[in-house]
Amino acid sequence: MNILVLNVGSSSIKAAIVHSETGLRSFSVEVERVPTQPVAHFSDGAQIEFSECGHEAVLRALMPFLRSKMKELAVRGIGHRVAHGGSRFDQPVLLDPELVLELEELNDLAPIHNPLIMQGVRIGMEYFPELPHVAVFDTSFHHTISKRVYTYALPKWLREKYHIRRYGFHGTSHEYVVELAASHLDRDIREMRIISCHLGSGCSIAAIEYGRSVETSMGMTPLEGLVMSTRSGDIDPGLFYYLMKKGNFSAEELNDILNLESGLKGLSGHSADMRDIIEQSAAGDEDSRLALQVFTHRIIKYIGAYTAVMGGVDAIIFTGGIGENSSVVRYRVGQKLHYLGALLDEDVNNDIALTDAQPVSKFSSPNSRVQLLAVKTDEQLAIARKAKAVVVGEHNVNPNPRIPVAISARHVHLRQETVEALFGKDHQLHIHKWLSQPGQYAAVETVTLVGPKNKLENVRILGPCRDYDQVEISRTDEFFLGIDAPIRESGRIENTPGIKLIGPKGEVVLPEGVICAWRHIHMSPTDAAMFGVEDRDVVDVAVINGSERDLVFGNVLIRVSEDFVLEMHIDTDEGNAAEIDSGDTGALMATQSKGVLQKRRIMSPVFK
Image (spheres, rainbow, N blue to C red):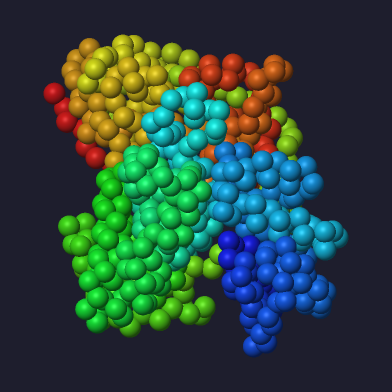
């Protein structure tokens, strides 16, 4: 399917007709210097200067060219890159006039980008009313970051009134390149911890743990994080007050300085282009050398931080205009990562030349524990594929029948060896009651969980025994025990905290295995076929409980097995907060992502 991808930037407008499967560009155009002296460069080599400047004038002048090509190439839909989707829009949406108004309410969250993008949306819908228009959000991939990651340490009333939180950007690029990298390495992305460095005019880093974004350097706006071409990245917020008081700067002047005059341009004093920075550094320009040093230092710092957040890293990706093309930047960063087990092959790094045919190049040495890769991003293709999925209804899921909801209390899964250490040699679990999932039961036996702060007694063991030890608790339990447990699916226990278990015959210290369970749905293959989902899909679920507090749960994992009965599991805290009881039902709304089966790593506990 051919999709027109429209990307309206602050100073440029890019449009391309992209085949959603092959990535072939049948036509493309880029307009530079839109606010001042707009010039269009077409893929056939033609070049046109516009008589009027400004986004509206250029967009309206561009539309006749697009219409002729779109009719000729049978374009089926238009995908719009939207910088900011706020807290609501976590996946692509089919646009209508009401949604456009709703999106325009988010303009203040991205004042440099969103107003111009929405202008492009409106003009596009005016000229092509017969085609479906799809918004694809830069922020949506990062909707999986946790509350502790996206919350700023500001007063609650301020955060809520002005929707202040971290959102993250470049999500379309990060999502695309990590999938490409995992495929190149012949690895399942849901088994990998990846750090993706998008280094271009705008720069951001994302920590992607088992296929989900868990940290990212940009925040409420694209200004936070790394040094960029003209953006400052991280600064002391006290600088605003200092400059407003000492220099009598207005808010608008400071915003322009930090977004348009800082970064590489501000450090070097002459250029925002990394190619110029490197050339002048080699020629002895100290300001350019400092710009390169600050730029790469910030990347190294974030890589170290995100490795700590994930408890390790399997691959580090360099993408974007700088990441793909600058061997100097890759080398200066890579040479500092030996402590991670990331060993750079300098010759391979120097020879990298990414193409559409060869979009991935590994430049780590054969004995490197961490893979280093340069990956050619393709946000246009990613947007085209997401838009196509909306156009043909791939995001729609059969809403019937209803899915029963079960509240999952704290519990423990144990190996037989651990059971015997706690209850005595050859001890077998006794059935207290059967659970809804076939073959699973709540055991008579209970244990005491001992955390750094407190202990929880009479925690039920679930049977039968498994080949790993795992403790599932709620957020309330987590704070009570004094444990920082990640949200994980069952069986994914690496880089999780341990805990002491006490039974009537002994104690066991688990080195890992404490998690807060990722909300999930059990279903059989027959159910999965009926709903149109697969194992490892992530979906949205509207929970129907007959009250005014019906709500949508996002980021729900699908688990498919012949042994499963249809049921959605949420923990006690979520059930209480939403006033949901066992017996309420849910309806599938949309599929967000695909996945495949995972493997698990087991560590042995310490018995006492």
